[in-house]
Structure formats: structure tokens, C-alpha cells
Length: 82
Length: 82
Image (tube, rainbow over the protein chains, first blue to last red):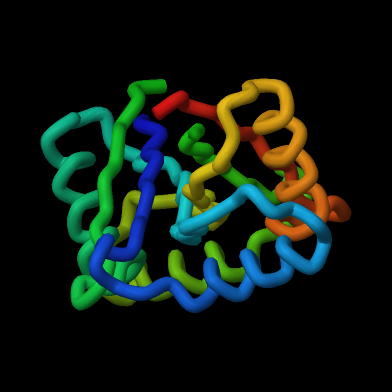
């Protein structure tokens, strides 16, 4: 079995309105020094196989087809044998 | 200046309906081996100060007051001097 950790980020050239909104809230609370907040996803799951290559393939398909939006996001992942 | 990276996860005891939903989609696509998908947030931003302690404080307040939901989420962060 593997534990997979996936990080999904918007491409740097694409605006992040959610991050912008949170940052405006921060200014109102007196948190003045933060800038360029960008909000992505951090996803954890288990892959129920002991074969590294097939785990790798399955994670890649999961990321491409469901977890990330290929138009505007990039993903990276790591697998840890458990 | 510091670059901050924050990871926000739901507490392990709290259900993650979003992860459950994505996982059901995975089964329909033939991705059968994934389980216990949990979706958190991965947030990056800059802190415009050179003092490590005040950067630390500001990130902590930002996380507690805006980025995370203290009722059901935990956060961890790291700071990197740039």
C-alpha cells in the first residue's frame, strides 16, 4: 500500500481571486505584510497496491481526470510506501 | 522577506464529504485502488518583513483568523527566507 500526497496549484500566470479576497480580509484585520496569497489544494489518499509503477499510474490518472483542472492547474505528487 | 507555505487539513476524526465525492467519481472511471481521499488546502504567500519572529506571528494570526477553520481544521506552516 502507498500513501499519496498531491499538491495542486494554479499556474502562476492565472489570477487567484480566492487568494485576493482572503488577503483583503487580512488587511481589514491589520495583517498588513502578507502579499500574493495563492490558494491551492493539498490532497492525501491511500493507493491499495504494492506495485510502485501501477500506483504511480493510478495516481497520475486520478490527478489528471478528477483532482486537478488541466486547463489552469498543475499538480505534483509523492508516494510513500506504508 | 519570507515565503510562507501553509497546509490546512481537516482533523482526522472529521468526515470529508468532498473527498468522498471525488472518490466515488474515481470508481466510476475505473480508478479502483484509491481510498480515504482527504482534501485540504495548500496556501502560499509572501510576508514582507525581515524579522523572523514578527513574520512567524503574522503567519500564525493569518492562519488562525482567516485561512483555517479552527473548529475542524489544523494548520501547519513553514517559512523560507528569500
